[in-house]
Length: 193
Image (cartoon, helix red, strand yellow):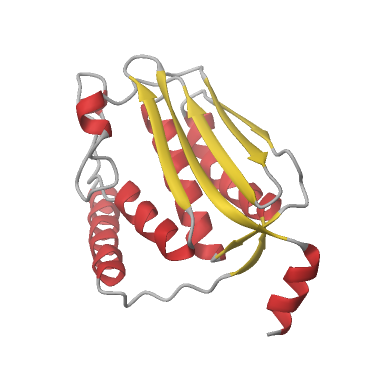
């Protein structure tokens, strides 16, 4: 219990420090072509352990498995892990979380959809601000600081990406992050620079 509590406090301190660095523009972002499939595999492997422990199934479908997005790889992993962890945290046992992409010629949108408790409309307008969490009888069972989404929003902005959250209470939530795509030609140019 002491070890678990210590790790929880350490994570809170790390989140606050990271948010402070992002607010002060002291956190560096290294934009480069990132293969979405590889990054998502890493994140789903980590999130899959949490999902399995709760009896959840992660259903992953990418429209194009060779898509590269313009991102900082570590920041992209952190955002996806935050979105998937939230979906796992607020989903009922034995349900499914969908992770899928939809692409245009210049953008790739990654969606994380759950059938959890949803977010009340008055809270939804504040999502992304530090220390804001969904409130309600169901969500009160889960502890957290409300910093994960604030950090994700800040990282996304710094990468030129956009996060959108759609939710209906007692129905579920879909979190979407939209990145600019890079072609294989522009990938070579950026790597050579």
